[in-house]
Length: 142
Image (cartoon, rainbow, N blue to C red; front, side, top):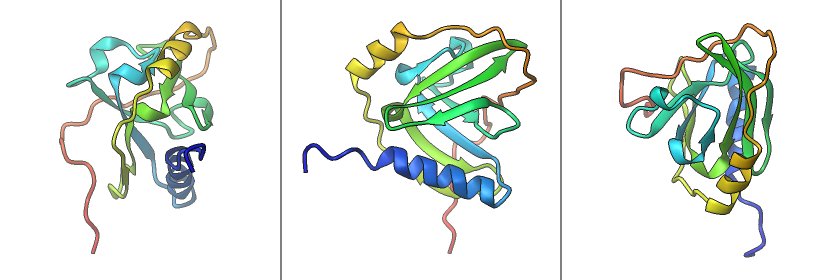
């Protein structure tokens, strides 16, 4: 069973789909070490929370190694790449429901991803809500 693909990207895709199906806004939280294309000043305690709804990002791709999309920071379009191992949570903004994960950052994936990191020059209106005031963002629902 050592060659099995991680379940984490499948769970991320499932929660993302669940959010969309229910009209919720999906957010992800990730550690800085596995994020590429995001301005450093947006990280708080080496972590960032990003809105990955279709209104905020374009060309969203969640594969087994990375989450990739195009968004704007201060009006500048950027291609964002987040290594799956750096993702610490995916949740619905409205309800806080979602999943948290233990980060599993693989340095080989990080070095491969950073070599491909680039800025895209597309004129698409996008927004990202990068910071959240509350430190707790998941709720226990009974």
